[in-house]
Length: 162
Image (cartoon, rainbow, N blue to C red; front, side, top):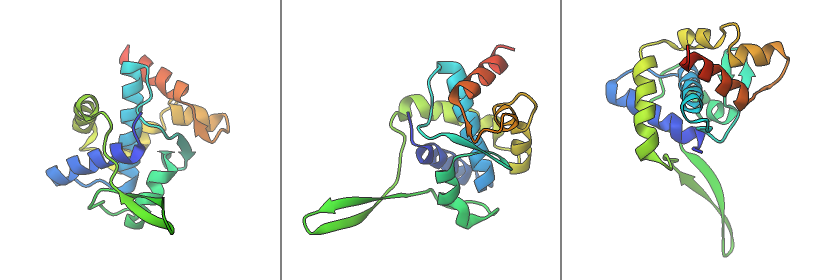
């Protein structure tokens, strides 16, 4: 499985290369759609983190917080993560750029997802996640906070087979 930030960074790089706007909201939805379609095709989760039900559709909190300073503006650089590393006399902060663990398999798939959704606005993508029967809709109707991967997988497999 991949880190959500690594998948997000791939989409940000696509956007920067094509000069297409990608906001935090749009990025969240791109990662969600990639996760869903990947599971539909492979029966495996793409990312490690779970999606939460949010007013504006599915959200990965760590991604939201990483890019929240952009507000609703275009994201202009890839995201970094920070970790504490123990050294001889204490700890240091280590800045890391998460990259895909399996780029040979994953990058072409993400590029396909990008090609399908890149010209949609953040609002249009959010509206897609609200459809009746969607994983976000089903989870929200049940009053749950976390969107289960099984729910996502089943929904996208059904879409794939229709």
